[in-house]
Amino acid sequence: MATTAHGNPGGAKRIVMPSKGVEYTVVNGAVTWEQGKLTDAKAGKVLRG
Image (cartoon, rainbow, N blue to C red; front, side, top):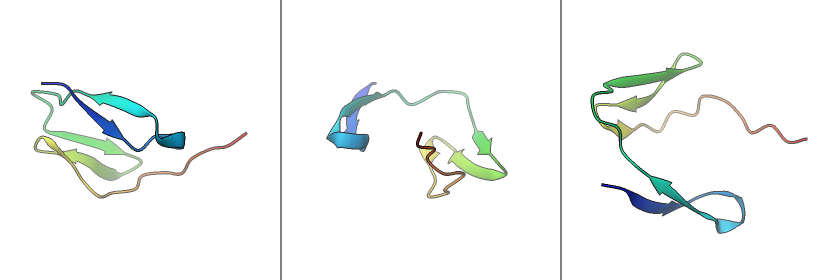
């Protein structure tokens, strides 16, 4: 089920649709998604031009 969340720059909304069947997501060596939930891992930085 899709939900809306805030957290984009300027307070913009985004649609969040949890995945099914994905156990883990690893970004730059940090587990960012584990057993259906986001982790608190910070796997990079925002690039600004």
